[in-house]
Image (cartoon, rainbow, N blue to C red; front, side, top):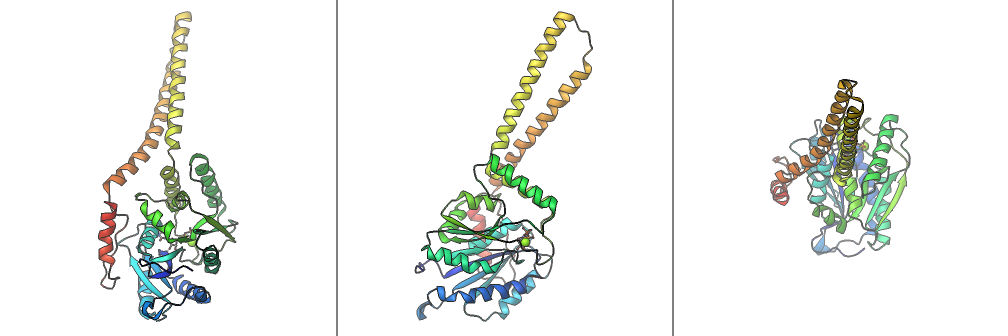
Length: 351
Ligand code: UDP
Ligand code: MG
């Protein structure tokens, strides 16, 4: 393991977005700490003058409605182990998992950052392997990511829609995302810095992780059912997420819109000429209302569709130029001391 440079205060940061995770959190902390204890020896003991915990856990409470925040504060208060620190950041409302990931990555100070879900669907048992691959390669392999081999346990409709999304997205976008790849991964500091350089308002981490590049390795594992029973993603949230994935990383829909629009117009033009010649040759035999109505409504429909596509992109430009912060931290009395400052810096970094 290379020595930490002056900007890093710990070897590993574990970033955990949390939304309504009161059920999973106690078990999560137990499993994580146990796993990390097992690999402590991989890291050099900190020197007496540099007596730092070898990892930190960063929980981002994404406006949970249950007791998640209370549990997190409690964990922080009861925490005594000198191997790690617990940092809790809390949003003023639910900003979504992408915002929570961003906040976590911004706060992470480690040389390596592990991102995983709180519901234990991302098995902590893979962490030692991830760290070993990263360290054995002398930090050459900068991303070690997990990929689920099966979709068993997921509803058939959801699995089919998911597969469809990946196929469509990979067909039209330059950034390819493998099906079954989760956000669960270890990333080197260099990758984190690259990700934080990306200032987009609409973040689609899966594609961003692929877009930044770097040497990577995949770890495969079997599907694990939700610890808390159900996914916190509603169908509508997933639908928005899929649109995000396609629109954020591809302008192909605009191109398709252009091509389809042109073809339809060409067809309409040809049809117009045909009707004109037909009328000259045979006279206006049929009043022609039905065909006219069909044509007008057809073209009208296509135009509306194309406007919708363009609208999606314009909406993104609009959101981006508004320069709103991607998340707002709740300024709780007990919150980490740098919370207030960080809200402001998020604002200015997006400005
Ligand atoms: N999550 C979040 N904000 C949200 C939804 C989810 O921070 O609006 C977190 C959630 O607490 C979990 C992770 O994102 O740690 C994945 O969520 P979930 O398990 O519900 O999704 P799935 O496993 O179905 O992808
Ligand atoms: Mg989950």
